[in-house]
Image (cartoon, rainbow, N blue to C red; front, side):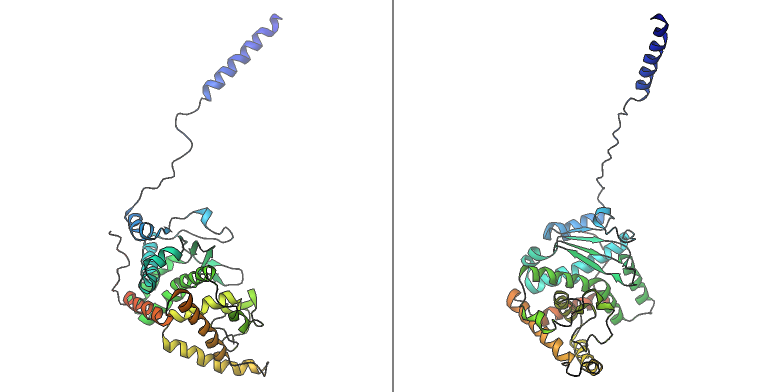
Length: 317
């Protein structure tokens, strides 16, 4: 037995030495994820969180993003500009037309920003998405300062600046908010029956160019009646009356092309206006909101932005 004693003692010594070397560090490997608040965070707290219980997330968070796309974080300065645009052109607009209690009750409770667009394989890209009426993801944020730089350089007019801000950044929010209102109070079923046989689902961007002649205000409106409704309202309130009449005239002209294939097809302008009449009545009856007044308020606010009457960079409280 003695001949085994030395190896055993040696093994015990090695184990003891190993345990001494592997002692746990007094510093925890679990790091505190708390982020120190900056001036922008305090501004968001004062203008979004406290008055509306809305979280405006501009720092990148993997669990909030869509992992099916390559994305980058939103630039802080671009995020500040977007926060001002959302507040002035969306939240404050509904405060003015319907009151702050309306906005507090129905506006989504989270915005999440990413720097780039989410590009699909077919060349199209995602401007924004909504989840269950509670969260809106907004993409392409880093392009906002570039639009204003183009305007300052004289490359685009005030009118084009307003149109670009609307199309790429603001109309999306009004579109998604329309879905929230519709989920809270349903619109008449008759809306979906007007063009029930001509919705094309995911092929909406692949269908021929004469969508207005077929009775749709945008190509995306062809996908289904819920998107059709939201597109009508968001397009209507982000453009003036002259633009709307131009769309109706274009729809009337395009119907000629549609009738080349379907001789009995109704005029597109008549279809669009009949659906818009339902949208108008719904907003008045369900929410006591006059869409023409809503449009006037929003366009006045757009005019304030492009004429630099709104400071989009200030984060002082």
